[in-house]
Amino acid sequence: MKECYQKFLGETLDMNIAQGTSSWILIPFIFLILFGIGYVLTNNDIQVLLLFFFLITGIIEIFFLMFFRDPERPTGDGLVAVADGKIQFIQERNDKDIGESIQIATFMNVHNVHVNRMPIDGTILDITHIPGGYLPAFKKESERNERVVTLIDSSIGRIKVVQIAGTLAKRIVWYGKKKQQLIKGQRFGMIKLGSRVDIIIPKHMKQSITVSIGDRVRAGVDTICNLP
Image (tube, rainbow, N blue to C red; front, side, top):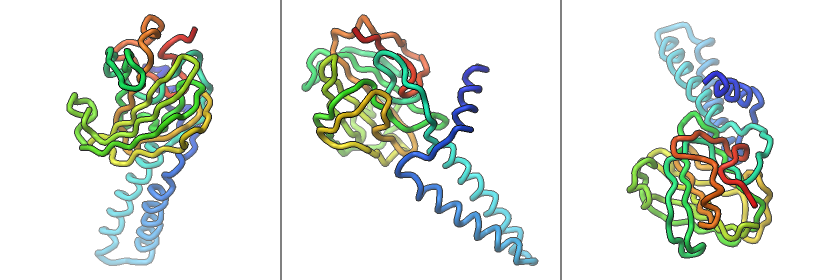
């Protein structure tokens, strides 16, 4: 537990802001300034109300700064985690683009970094947005939620990354484009306000998987599968 807090604190101090989130941080900051100026310039009953709004806006600003942080990280060995969070399930499936495969799902909590990273060097073959609902990502019914499916050609064959929206997460952002070559650990997108990210790999990699259900992983750093 102590090690987890040290990692969290270290990454928070070495903080960048995730691409595409500046407006989320700028708007409450502007209101924070306005409420602060109003509080200083007034001396009547409205001052208490302005102080209340100043404090609430400050809490929101801190929350967004923490939520949209994007720390620099070393890239781990093997096939690395795509998202921060807890391994929710690992199961076999038959994927239409990959065939017999293994699906590894990572549930992202509010305190996790929500920037997603490439698990392996590869070329983006296709990016598909699928509309759907916004059920809690930890429920099985979330398979019908809105999602972005990315098909990647890699050294172990075709793999998929599936970014799934949730109850609060209603904006999936993708930084890349089709036919783009990306390297392992490179940022490729995020889900604003969290949710779940799945990676689907060929079944022949099953014996090389190094994580179990309940394990906590960090995107780009922790190995989830050894490579041949």
